[in-house]
Length: 568
Image (cartoon, rainbow, N blue to C red; front, side, top):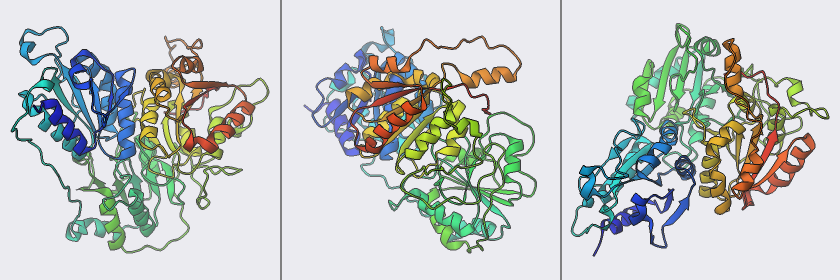
């Protein structure tokens, strides 16, 4: 007899969901025990890490990944990670266990009220009306996740998996095509706007795809358009992924995240085109308009919600890579005078041009995106003095291979990372666009599992790492050769500085007793404590040249001083 479980496994095979990330509970036991040999189960020790690993896997494959969560407790523990996946626009199919359908009305132990538990962050939540509807619901979840670029949930009672599935109709298309072409006539208003611009600028975001519809790198079309326009290209603030090569001469830096500095950065530009980026993401509220009077904003995005809420003068709901490729052919080429970007108060005035790309990010002296950080922050520490985060990042940048996948979750050091470590591929900078912590460690594990031939590094603060430390066990157990660089200052530096700005004493203490290297080793992950510049150089020189081939994870617990210069 064919069962609902058998039919669902066929759906998983057809959609490529053959790796299952999970932390098992009793309501999933009938699904997970005795898996066929062609389905792989990957264990994480916390549900946040389950979704984090799946998120990294999906980003690496640019396709939906599969996660399984345990009823209320599992889904509840994972909500923050689900929110991050939604804001990062990462497609996931999430199966959530539920108590036996036959006595749900009596609310037995482990029965979950699951429909709204994850809020509005899933792109779809479905509770099939009968067991035989589960395979179709899973197939629809795959389509929903891929179309709306987010997590789609299917809640499945534990007895449904053994139900018969004979002669049923699968309520989902076997193949779904999403045409992405945009007619030239529809692009006419944007072509006219750009052709008539006196001083255009582009803002690139995480919505610029890693690959275009033709399989070519998604950045290529935006680079072609930017070079055609001869204009500066900014990176969106708080973006989940780089949207433009940051070693390109026209890269201008990260867009400021408050209105006064945003207006200053974009002043002098009469047309600003946002591509795969919101208009415009902010953090602290400040009154006033986003741009100076006389500046026209246009938007190209594949995200309907992003398009609907953006205060743009002209918006296109379309695939960014496809639109940019066609615009690069339709927009007249502009003269190419020496280019200079408007200075950003956040990132400091960028240099007029960067050296041509080379196989490695760092030269000696290294190139910087923006004005150099203070020399004291980059200088080798004096004997007995702690390392500065900028110094650690500069030493890392000098040695990074150009195809590195770098995941960032170090809020107090992020400005220095932006300046010192340019992203050369769409995955050269990956971050949690939601702003919550606990993303970087599991995402790095999932990314390396999906891209086994790419070097993968997570640069994480110790406060951030504690939220996702469980993922180190998965990295060690499954021999995932990622490098975790933890900048350990034993406190929540950003919160301390915000408290200082408010002129009030913070009630939270430092956590100097915590040893990240000790925690890593307790989870089976090799770790080293790094205190001096010599120890840092020795560790990086040993690990980075062979990182792409490495099969064992390593955590570097790097002691750094508290840097007072951070501005959120």
